[in-house]
Image 1 (cartoon, helix red, strand yellow):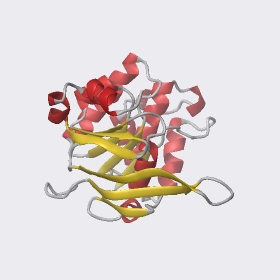
Image 2 (cartoon, rainbow, N blue to C red):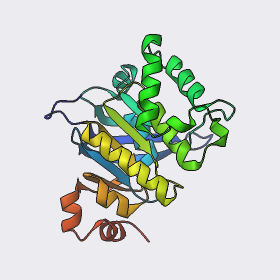
Image 3 (cartoon, rainbow, N blue to C red):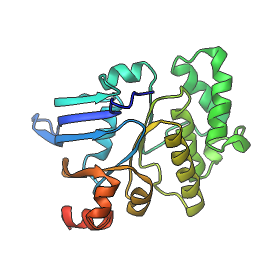
Length: 246
């Protein structure tokens, strides 16, 4: 785990450009983004569609490189931390083959991740228990509900017992029961000392659950601070409406 004085994530002036067309013109997804996520806390990236939330998570996961600026995860580059198996990342779409059983899918992912075969069975059992999927371990992925598929993504992310979890829209499309299950998992993992950064459109859940909030619009940070700052500013919905375009 991280030490108390070492943040889970530190971004300073992060810029991310993409080639937008065949002429080589650039599209800026992130523009001078700076924020710090303290270790052992649950943070949220919020903002309109296209604000840069998914891009930010991919940079922190080591799946993309910054164009300029600095992004540190657990005191090192994201790529180095990811290579050491200390990051668990869940994209917004869980792309696992529908014909595999839950158990077989996790086994395949563990092998792809280079997990020691002697530890794999125990790791899968633990992941299924933590994500409340033990009863469906032999069910095919294609037969799972939306909430179960989301939790399968979380199970995959914690297989290697990572220090940092990066979750892209984990609550998207969940019914109230599945949302409650997700909330329990996030609270439990925070209590265990894991650092978590998620993206979400569910402002009430973010305000109630998260310790730290980063609000993005058009790739720029328009607000960043702890929950008490959000509350002092009148609540997350007010902050969101005041600082983003209609």
